[in-house]
Image (tube, rainbow over all chains, first blue to last red; front, side):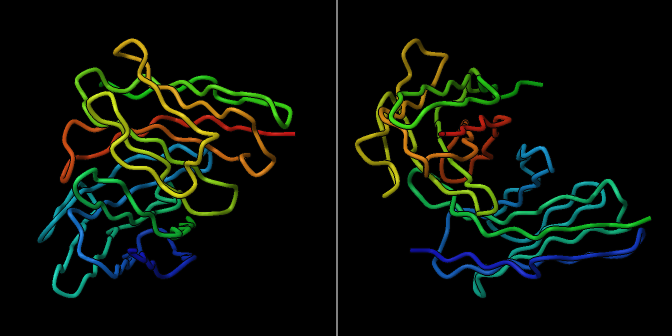
Length: 109
Length: 114
C-alpha cells in the first residue's frame, strides 16, 4: 500500500513569494500527479510526470524517482493561487490514484 | 475544451434510500474512475472501469456500490442503501490512457445522507 505524504499541511505567503510544496511516497509508481482543488471543491489536474521536470507558466513540478519525492514550485505567487494543492500517485495497470492529504495555500496581497 | 460533467451537483437523501450519481466522461476516453472525499478528509479511490467492466475496486466499494456504463456515454455510480457515512463529495474522472494518462475530473456531486 502506498503512503503519500505532503508537507507542509498549511502554507501562508505574501504575494510574490516563491512557494515549494513537497510530496513523498513509499512505493514505486507509474506517474505522479499534482492537482489543485478550489474552495468550491472542483479538482483540476496541473501536472502528470514520471521523470524529470515540467513547467507551465509560473508552476514547476519536479520528481526524483530514486528518492520517491516530488516538489511543486510556484514562482511569483499571487492571491489567485490560493487553493489546496494535492499530490497523487498512480499505479499500473489501472492508474488508480492514491491521494495525499493536500497542502492548503493562502497567498495574501 | 472537452470536460467531464456530473449530475446532480447536490443530492440529499434519506438513509436506506438508493441513489444514482451520473457522469458523462470525455467522449474519446477509455478509462473511468469514481473517487470520493468525505468533508475534511483526503480524496479516496473507489473504483476504476475499463472495457465495460470493473478493473479495480477499493475496500470501500462493497456490495452496496455498483457502476455501469449503460449507453456508451454515461457512467453511473449506484449506492443501493445509503448510510450516513456515505455523505461525501463524489468525483468522476476519465482518462484516455492508463499508466501515464492525465485524469480529468468532473465538478463532483455532493451527497448528503440524512
